[in-house]
Amino acid sequence: AAFIERMIDPRSSSRVLTLATARVGDGAPLLDAMRSRGRDRLVEIELGPLTSDEGLALAEDMLRASGEAEATRLAREIAGDAEGVPFFLAELARHVMLSHRADVHSVEDAIRARVADLGPEARDLLELSALGGVPLDPAVLARAAGHTRDPMPHVRLLGARSLARASSADRIE
Image (cartoon, rainbow, N blue to C red):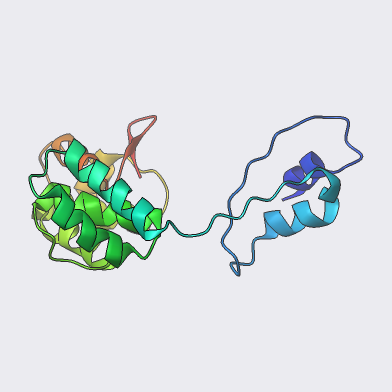
């Protein structure tokens, strides 16, 4: 926090572009500090939800790019469920692209379905990785789960399903 405050101190001769995102009401300390100390150099851009047409277009583009045959019909369902939130829209579209089903109506349900489709070894790696909260060695996670096979095929599967990613230094997060 002290480093950030020094970066945005208006008396500093350093020029640093700081780009940050925050949700209204999340108690964003960085944004509060920027507002109080760097007021003359702060530019805030408020992003509202996508319009119905924008959400529909984005969902349809994502589904068409994946080769989904019923892109228009499915995009209408997804856009309505996402309520203009691009992250929600992307996750619901990802569910359709992976499962070829439009059977969920919330991000929580989409992720839950994606996890349920995993085999037990991949699910164990995902659960232990989430519990760790920091990038961890997949081999260590596999041993902790009692698995004896190479965990990397499961790590790649988790990445392909956008549930985890391999970071630098052979870690999963």
